[in-house]
Amino acid sequence: MKELNPNMQHTFTTDQEGKAAHVSIIPSQLTYPLRLSVLWQHKNSLEECKLDIDDLPTTFHVGAFKNGEIVSIGTFLQQQNEKFEATNQYRLRAMATSSKVRGENFGKLLIEFAIEELKNRKADLLWCDARKVALGFYEKMGFNVIGDFYEIPIIGPHKLMYKEIS
Image (cartoon, one colour):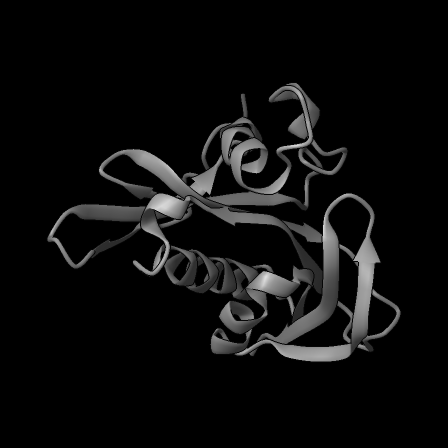
């Protein structure tokens, strides 16, 4: 299991009910349950939720916790997209938030935390393939849309979105 980055600060905040919440870099294995339950219900096991990029040296995973339970996840990997001229691009993959906490800002906290980590890594752009149902969330987080919808088999319609890191 990958150890947490000792140089990374945890971000602490409070939700509407006054319950403790925090966001931190996590090992890839902690992303699998939400990947399976929220994103990839067509898969049969947690092991099938492992991505080939999960343990690359330039990949990191972020988790948001509510009362010790992981409720939102995102995977960030260094990957160039030819549609952008930026030289140090990162891609967001497999972001998911538990339906139990949607609207409580855990996804927002996760993205804000990741942006700070991306600044530390000198990234200049973050891009993602956003599901149709998540477009509004990403727009609220300052992402821009490029192009038309395209279909990802089994998953559904997506749009390419990006956010410049400054």
